[in-house]
Length: 526
Image 1: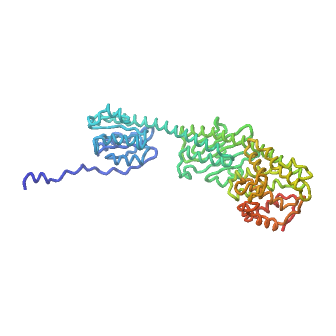
Image 2: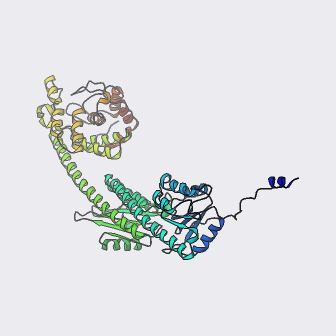
Image 3: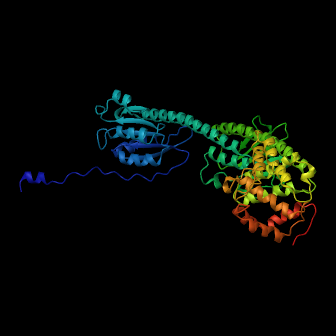
């Protein structure tokens, strides 16, 4: 064998081996630093130079990548990396620069500070790299003495901390805006309380394991002179609907007293937080909540801003409730006026309202809509105010002319209310107009058919007839329950919406219970 053959077949020298990096132990409160370099000695020297140093009371957690592929994997998993010490020439002459583009453009990470380190400055001239790539510092490896390394890393961390604080504030303010939009949508104190707790979880960045991080909280409002728990989470969930006195503790009262004495009504210490808000209108509201983290200055600022908006939401809700209560009072007075005119109706208005609410809930309408329908149903006979008593209270059958006059009451009532800006009164106007329509199109005044009749009109149509049949009128005796339900079975799909008749049949006892509760005569049916 010739010397040439020995050279030709001599084993290729293997790549330098590196000892495996120790497993990375991640501490939540430490700065994350990624070293990207294909030389194992650079990793070791870098750690040696800055290990044991801390910045703002926080130490360092080091991550290691020996090529751009490893670096990409790490950065995809840890997008809260603070500093990257990045080599330029690794598997290719520009692999480091391509990694910069990946970080800034694909990961869209503009917060992490990138320090470019190179042992071959000719491959990546500083002037060209600084202009064309979004890096934050450029160093030749030979110039990184111990002091300069410390200055470089601490300067990068200081920049990262400043940018992160600005970004967290931006995100926090965005959450405040979103949270405020959410809480202003709530139309009841109960839902507002739960909405506030949900938004607190988001604002304080408490994750899905909020059972541990956001353990317990309650929302209390003073209603008719009594403090009631309207919403609760965690350990306080069981107290919803009960008096605050049953759950109040000395620790809780101390937090609330502190909140009450603060300018913004907010207090938090040791993970125990309270917010207090009242107005001259007599509304008094407060929240108490416990979290598994200590609030920093940024958290406190965000919460004070959030609770300023919560205060406005409570004010808005109480104002809305006051207006709504006034509307209810007016509508009920109108309905009561009609009851006084009629010789037969007794508690007809109240019973129809309760039947309507029950039908609405059973057919899938929301609690809020069912309550609105209950209220809007009360003036369904308003138009009869213009009908002569001789016709309205006639004990015998009506003549065709008299029946024609009776039918005009739907237009009279509708026209009295339709121009109101109130959604409830507008709904009442449409109920008045449509509650005498029939499923088969044979009703009045418009001859509407099937689902062309608004669901409110269909519901009140059933409720009104159910009450008319089951109670004594000047023109007939009260029917027995057997006769009432037999009539609805017969008129299913003709006079009445089949679905509503089915609901009535399936829930007979609940409808009979409403009749018993509000029937002033107290007649017992079979």
